[in-house]
Image 1 (spheres, helix red, strand yellow):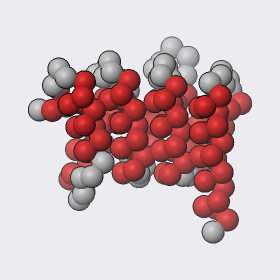
Image 2 (cartoon, helix red, strand yellow; image 1 turned 120 degrees about the vertical axis):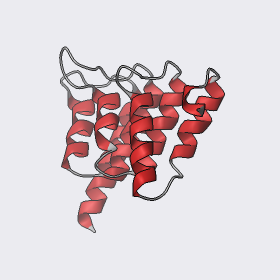
Image 3 (tube, rainbow, N blue to C red; image 1 turned 60 degrees about the horizontal axis):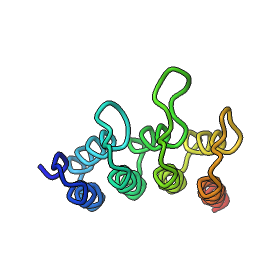
Length: 141
């Protein structure tokens, strides 16, 4: 299995390839694999794999993708999973949430901007603002 391969580049490619899967069963497999790579006990050590996982979840979209992206961006609260340490992962998570849209995504994006514990990386904050603008634009259409 490429997702468990010792080579970072193979795992990065596998994460990116999962976004191209189609069909309900394929999407469920992709959600599970990408979510495990992005957050949780089986989180991948390589930030490049996590970035590709976040990007792929954003492309696939849907309600199943949002929880992992929210956790990667802002964490789950005190004493639980924390936001990803890599700002690029948080940027891709923010962009993915903008693509998914909805109130849960918007709430997490606002948390990244306003806190508690707002993100202090300017590139993440820019991605968050762009994602919020995308969600606001969807509401106008």
